[in-house]
Image 1 (cartoon, helix red, strand yellow):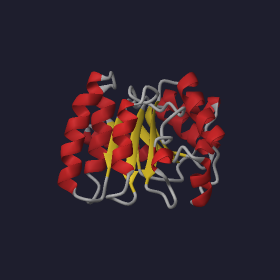
Image 2 (image 1 turned 180 degrees about the vertical axis):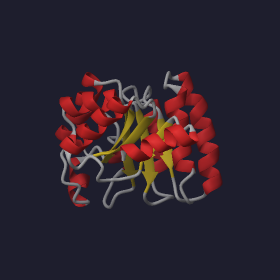
Image 3 (image 1 turned 135 degrees about the vertical axis):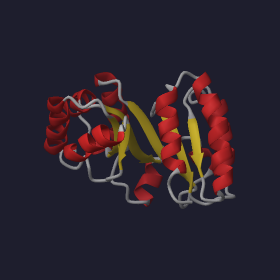
Image 4 (image 1 turned 60 degrees about the horizontal axis):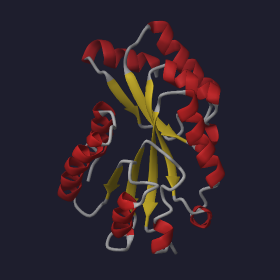
Length: 212
């Protein structure tokens, strides 16, 4: 992993990489060893990756920040425990809150909360619980069933006192052009809310680069 990061930095001038490996953080010791090796080689490249709330602890958060990590994407999926159980997520909301708190308390890594709107049996009110009390730095919502109440719920979240200051990106499989237009609108909105432009642009671009 570190060899590839070094190659990308030295040969291609890369300054940011997102590690598309859902199991990258499965073993804490390995992640810490990678971060220490990045430091030992003096690499300046920044990176982000997917994370499971069960793997986060203070030591790991500090090590990842020192190793150049600037973004962690947590697959939270829903703010309702019943829905997490329905999709067999095997995590609790208490674990989610603790993971977000741990990252924010022990590092400057930005937390990206990934949610799904339209889970089986989800009600409109439950959609509004998606981001409340979780406090990520950026919310990304994937609409599982386009045309349902999901997009209306996003509008309510933007006007909810508890979530109005948290940037929200909606990812939908409906049409790529709609996504691109939404991303442009959200980008301007989020920068006004104080989200670092470099993190925002990287996050949006990473999704637009994925196949529609």
